[in-house]
Length: 116
Image 1 (cartoon, rainbow, N blue to C red):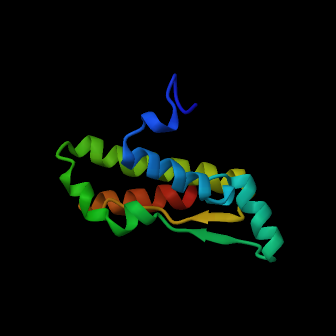
Image 2: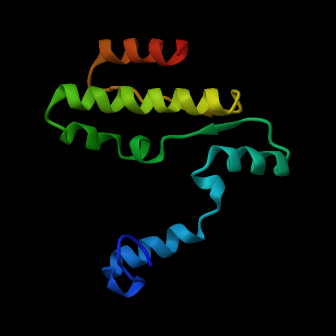
Image 3: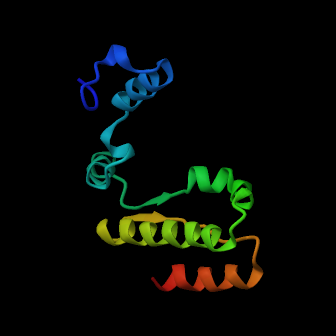
């Protein structure tokens, strides 16, 4: 059973495919503890964590018409990145994202991310 009262056969094809792909992921793809264990196995001390979706598709932020929501997305991501870094003892080093649509906001967020 997957979900409440659902069999695999009850899923839409796209959801079934997504679940099967997620099931194939190594836990280090989403679990910081597993990521650190993998880094240890590979002899890697520190890893930079890039914001794949937010980084490669950053122009999509401009589709959010409410400026406060757009800015909140950046702050929330960077807060979570800081928590990940702290939880890893500094071994996972996430790259902050910046509100490129606002030069002053970019400087403020850059300083905040650096000192967080």
